[in-house]
Length: 305
Image 1 (cartoon, rainbow, N blue to C red):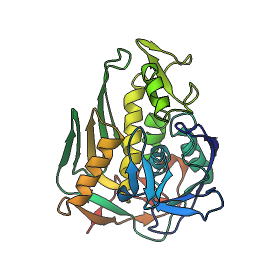
Image 2 (spheres, helix red, strand yellow):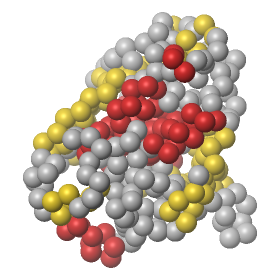
Image 3 (cartoon, rainbow, N blue to C red):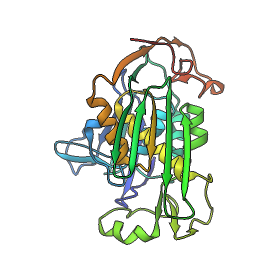
Image 4 (tube, rainbow, N blue to C red):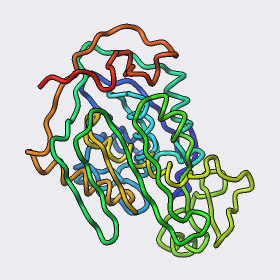
């Protein structure tokens, strides 16, 4: 896929590829001015910034920004292992949603691997408060994201949205929800080096009580749904799919990362478990109904320690 970085404004290409069992999501950064390609694991401890986007890097600095939408697509579609090759500093923003990545995954197909699926199972609630933002992970049989947002902007106002994650549910309910912003923030963002590639083609833009995009909204609560999309992508940095319910109130990338970090730091709050599964081929009708990468896992499957 090719596009531009929403913050850098630079052209960038991205290629999704397979990865070995238990590899997780690995970003491969190419195009480094003659330097060797660099890899970074998509995990919580690789996050080096969460201002307006999730930025991954290593001890030598940032490698790839705006990682959350492609990670959301992979996790949302039930992919566990993949390489994400990027030849620029950002994942291409595409239309501001995860829809293009979902389409690419659908076209390429998902192959099952000869291993039981592993999960991070949350064992007790973990909460984080940052100012008037609040986030919580709590035990749950599958993965559920509950988001509540509140903006003074009258077009957005107060919105809630919840998603019980499945491939079909992600594709239908949140994958097309676009990133959004405000004209009043434009000068400040540009001066700080952000949103240089933002446009009506890749962002929902509000100006006071007006929506500026001529085509309108894709969902009446598109902003809340996009926050769910972001949460799925940011929590993919756990390294494994999660058995948990996540609640976010007036949050964003910073809160998502803080809650995930707090969970992983408390070894009494989670454990790694395996799903007992029966492997067979995947059909389109089964997508989103317990089928994960060609593996039958009712809900999230019977769990064994």
